[in-house]
Image (cartoon, rainbow, N blue to C red; front, side, top):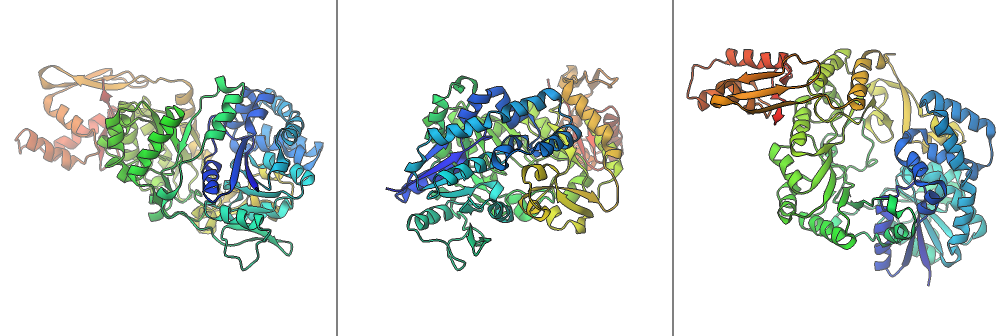
Length: 611
């Protein structure tokens, strides 16, 4: 009986199974097709050591492609001149990596040939008729290097690639450069891949008029895409992912004691916000933003099943954004269950305080809200659909509820103004006791994003693949352009954002590298007042007492309010129509001056947290 082998190569993360191939395996088996999965990332990590493997996966900048570079010689042959140029141009000049890291990369590369020989000997390739490689991030060259050797020794085996690196024109570009790859699946493959396998097993090659969509194939020497793939309309019909091969590989690895496994869970595809108003810098989901989500009951069942089956309490949702209906149907049930789990989710920043509390009760301990900026102007021009105060409000509430926030501050958006960053710096100095951003960097130009598709319209010129690609894919410029996902560019205005962003960059570097910055908190005072305690650096007030009316005004601004709303609240609270809006405004502005509040000029937000 014919069989399929799905392969996950370096540098797939050791702590996570591959969700894509873990879904394809049970789908194939439902079709009566035998399928196995091999995680060849583990033996390579054993060869070079867990520390060096993590250096590639977690520590080095992704766009340096250092991991892919370690397999370049095995794929293309020796090229010492190009190696030297890559080290100088990319590793040293672009990323300022030290000699110890560079030496480590050469050490890793020296193990690649032995690793590939091991792969050829350790796997019974002759037992399989089709081998599929999943390729995301820096898995591409390792997969190609093995696929090339596999095709040379077993020319009858059909080689198929899939994953984010092979989507649409990128997949066609790669397919045209590597003739030993027979087919590639572009985008979602739950429908296209089983159909392709059946056709391959029937020895019936694809043709230009074929009805199998989403497949890249060759016809008369050209790499063609059979059309956009069919998408899964009802995600509830997907099987549970089969992680058994991953956990078997982990259990048999002597690195198992050093790896803390994380379960991956998918509850939606696409982005419901992007379907309404796509963020201009976002290239996720390719050209398919259609949002689909699993029903709350299915999502809860899947979560419980995976956690119970594998006895793992760390779960990462791979969704681009959480479905808001989960706040009324799934998360409350999860909170009531008191299940001891820790979940990561990407969320929208404009949640209510009750929703943040529910996330915490349900076991969501880490969130990525896509904050990106603390300037209303910049958030508006990038199409983010939130405001600076809403972002700060979320950071504050997550701090109160113990949720870790993954967020970045980006700069260099077309249309931003230097003054935007002075306003951001003022805000950062006020909230420097909250969770700092993970990084502060330039906006990236990614394929499929509106900035990429309409570059001239947004004042972006001289679009070219980032330099690293040319050392990983030594082909003609147009071929590399087709393969690339991330691009360098110039501004038609000629402006360099770093000329006005450096103060913010330096502040964030200091904030991240020298925590903590004290705290701004409050507690109940005597006679119905409120005591604010301030131990932040650069703030002269250490303790201030608010009187009852001031206290109520401050606590009311735990959520964003206008002076008019505060005035109406106080008049009703104290049954006093004599409270003037001007007096309230003067009070709120005095708190902004003391960095006890932040404002956008129209709305106010208290930033102290309960002691």
